[in-house]
Image (tube, rainbow, N blue to C red; front, side, top):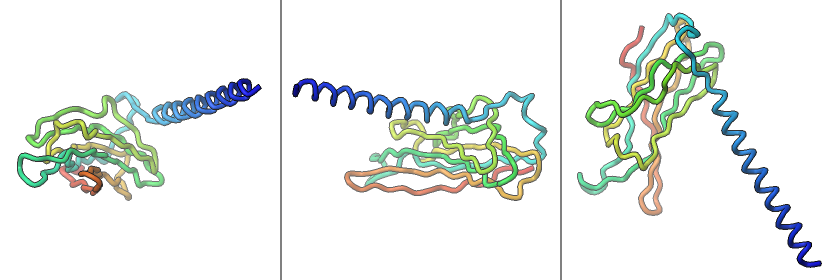
Length: 175
């Protein structure tokens, strides 16, 4: 009898935990399906275009110029408009020497009103360096009353001490 009770409890625990995993998977799938990647023919004529520089610190000097703390960087693009969509034309990641490491989008991305897109550089990625940065180019059908918030959040730790700070973007070109 005790084996039957243990068996039922074990099977119940497996079913419950499997449902949790499936739900997490569906949530991630649903989140990725919400991203709108568009071919050029589906992007409206953009009357407003802007390019921004976003500093990122994928590593930070510690005690000397030869010792680093590697960090995770989250670059966040937040459409603050309640009515206008914005279209990401390019999101590129560069290292300290100004060499492009990778393009983070393949097609134009549409961010609907109040939508946020995040791009994460893992702390294991050591290619960026202390002067890493992003170049973000975006546009909109009309001139925006509410410009998006584009910033990088650096997250790191040393021993038991964690830290985080943000870096605001700077406009390079605006038309």
